Length: 129
Picture (cartoon, helix red, strand yellow):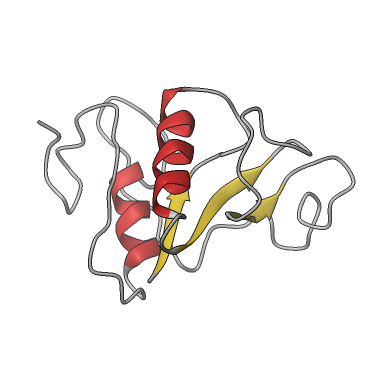
């Protein structure tokens, strides 16, 4: 079975990264596992990852990378529409839950695990409990 983990930044440090890597390594014993990092800001990960696990990034933000200054990189996304700004902020960026739903809309996966740090009552997934 092919198993893919989608994480914001596997190149950073923290409990979520450690947990994803531990679970990926355990599952890689019997399955084809990959970790997909939305962003890449470093050359190597802070935690060691077994070579049998494929790691790839969607957006490479390291100095000198093609993604860093690519045409259109500062324009609004066509995949994730701008969300209305909450009353308490002037930001028009999509909420994490809205972005997560948009990213997974075209997948055929049956199980998606999502971690959210704070309530997001306006999200399509409802408030965090």
